[in-house]
Image 1 (tube, rainbow, N blue to C red):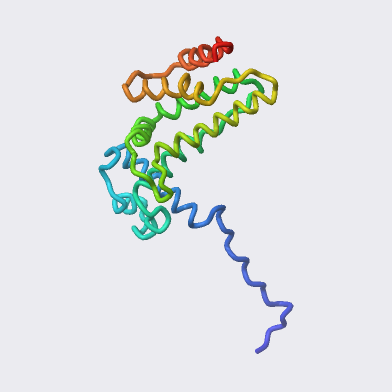
Image 2: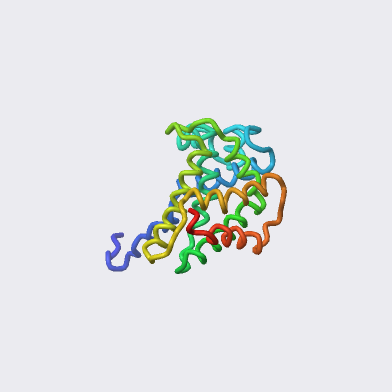
Length: 203
């Protein structure tokens, strides 16, 4: 018997796609698995197969997206220590630097911060683009700092050079963590900024 088209229920709408889709979920799972393995075993003590098994994805999915374990680790480290730490915009250079130093200290003293930092130091092999994790990390971090300093100059503030910030703020934080001199108290990170900004004429 033919049904009146007006009485036939419309087909259900297609399921809503989650933002980012499967590719984003795979990247998140693989990043999480790699971060856990870095923290548990250290750089160089696991394989792509180990990461894929923990992330519950096929080895081929990891190789297709990253090509090599080194390229994957480069993506993980840069994402965790830079992309997850946006540069602050407080309205003043002093405020920006204090917030930046505090967040950097928080990142490297977190549960997996030391392991990720050690990976940056030891990951010397170049990725597919010929750039090592360490070099890429430094380039991204430098670009972040440069943007913060350019913003300060646009406000008419006297800003240091990028290397001054890397040498005066990030390097002491990273060195202390690598040698186990923690925790990094707010007074310490603020003192680094104060010292950097204390003598602008000497820069």
